[in-house]
Length: 238
Image 1 (cartoon, rainbow, N blue to C red):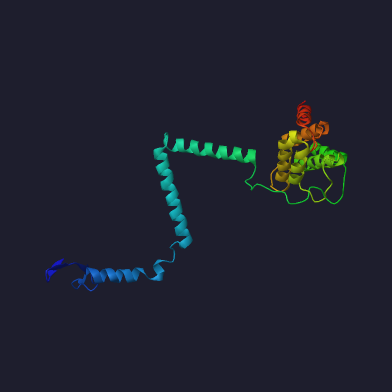
Image 2 (image 1 turned 180 degrees about the vertical axis):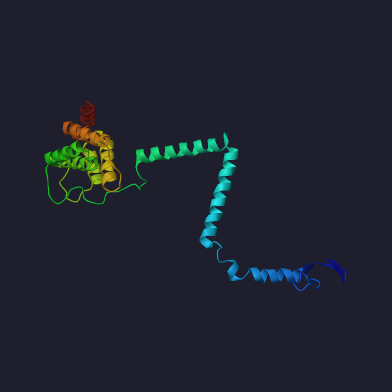
């Protein structure tokens, strides 16, 4: 570097092939020339594209994050691995137990199809599906048997467009001892029919037990006295 007007100016010595003294170039023009040279397309043909650069940045961030977590976790990387595997096992267990995430279903489709069948026919169909471990269909047919049985006993007015939720709400007024179980049965029906959930044998057996208990339960009429209602509740509990 040499002084020029009180300012230090850097120079770059470029050798010459003819043996003459090297050509000196000031630093800033040399840097600009190098920048122009390196900006040519031939030097960037093998550079990663935008997506590759984004992926590289993402994986670098993940690597830094895991490195920081392993440093803060007791046991280092091994401890972090144990925590990750434990969390994955918990998520898998919840997924297996609760099924896929879904919104709370509300039945909007009629409970019965166009062809009317008796409660006995629905029960027989439910048992046939249960014997083949087709639990969703077994639950559907057993719920239809419950509602059809209540219609046959004149506890519900036959109505083709009735949904499971509506049937449970109406039946609960004449069978108050089973209101909660009727609502739960309607939810089970909605879950397997509209909610995408898979039923199991415990769901079907719970619904079959409700069907049997309703058969033995006397209805509570609107003008019944409190003592009559209490007796009906005791009869349902027996």
